[in-house]
Length: 367
Ligand code: SAM
Ligand code: MD0
Ligand code: SF4
Image (cartoon, helix red, strand yellow):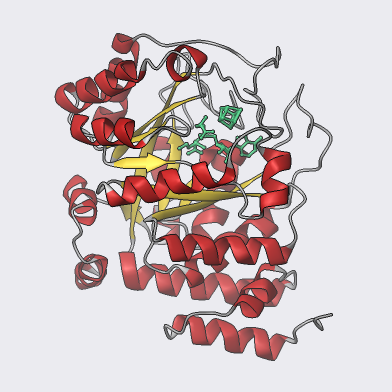
């Protein structure tokens, strides 16, 4: 049994991480278990210091287009799992997706995330050309960097997506513990999902991995996830606090606290200082944005055009039609934290492999 860590050794680990030493599994686990308010505040300050060093004061904004909510899978946490009659089902046309992407780009997002369930019309019928053509059109007509989140797809499809102009492939493992994975993503191959991100990276795409918080995992399992994500070398990592969904097997599981999510996010920032880490509007809407930014996030995701009929994943409607999940809605919350929206060129430079420390220096020079 590990003894609970005292505050002094916790702070020593945090300082070592700020100085650039890689944290060990035990230390990561200890940080992930923090529930003392003063220690947590110390952790958040450290996460901000590290973010500032790598990214300066600038924040990237991602638009979200959930263009097909049909899915063949049975993820136990997901509102859109096959057979759930509670969730809104739709497929947007190509024109509708291009319009939403254009609206988002004009409103100032740095990237558009084209997301779908594992729609059987596409996945079972091998109709990936529809997705590839969609990416090609968005790249050609809107000229905004694109992330695709289509579920697990093969190497050839990833290559065609890249050739069509996709910059990013997002595919979250949720947990890097095989037994828990089987409970969260029943019937889905663990290694196949993990390998899809490696294939994307090998093809020159950027990749994102992520974990769910509050789905029965231990702090040890979370710590192992962080180490696995660090080792795979993806450029973006996230934690999503679980939101219970009507009509799903995990509907009665309680939602984890905002503090627990902040502690996880800040620990990720110390473990993977130079990666992009999102604050998603899809968990609490705007309400929890400042907290996630204070914990060290440097991207805001799930910006959705109001009145577009588009849904979120874990908060299908929250804040959307009120126009709060917009660039203007987000920007109001940046200035009080001393943060600001990055320029378009800054995001492209980061994507092109510009040394993010260069961005930090420039941002500091500007004051
Ligand atoms: N269908 C594709 C897939 O599963 O890879 C793309 C959808 S992906 C955007 C859905 C992600 O949202 C999941 O991987 C999960 O991390 C997150 N998510 C889904 N339901 C959630 C919930 N109830 N609470 C928190 N996060 C959730
Ligand atoms: C988000 N709802 O950013 C989106 C989604 C998929 N790549 C992202 C989980 O929170
Ligand atoms: Fe389908 Fe993705 Fe939801 Fe799983 S998380 S049920 S694959 S939409």
